[in-house]
Length: 215
Image 1: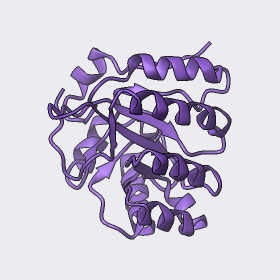
Image 2 (image 1 turned 135 degrees about the vertical axis):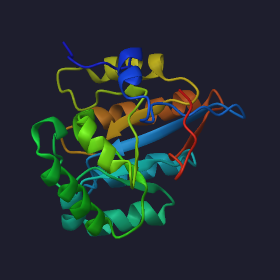
Image 3 (image 1 turned 180 degrees about the vertical axis):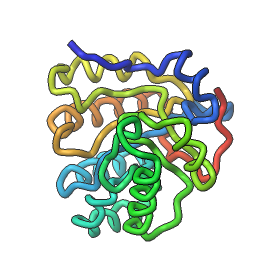
């Protein structure tokens, strides 16, 4: 049994209306793919291969310490034309971290990235209002419309796929993870999800920097 919401609900969006949850685009059906917690050798490379098959762009919210350990993977992401965002250096839970330490951890991640980004995603989606106020001076906080749940090892891959497809709609920001924990499920779900929506003439884009977000 899973203990998370596949679809972000109205209450969350109401509490944090300034965060990006979904991107409205009236020109064509578009999905905004995002990948958290990498980069990781083999896992991130698999994601890049799948995206390339569908000329899909994505945004990778990177952990600074993983960038430090696998910098060549970051270069591969950038060379493939994808965007990167800040996901803290140590995957910190904002609710459990003092503001000063949290903000310093974000800055430490930015130093590792070495490229400009205006996109930040709080690990676990957990960030205090006081932290968010500081973060939004330099970043847009990107949440999600659909959480695939690929990280949940109790969730059968076929159920993960079905739920992700069920809740994804034009403009959805969808979260996957290029992490070792999510790897067994993600490698099943991602290719099938891409194929499903490509057959229905969806395009796959990175979250723009900056962007107008519709709610």
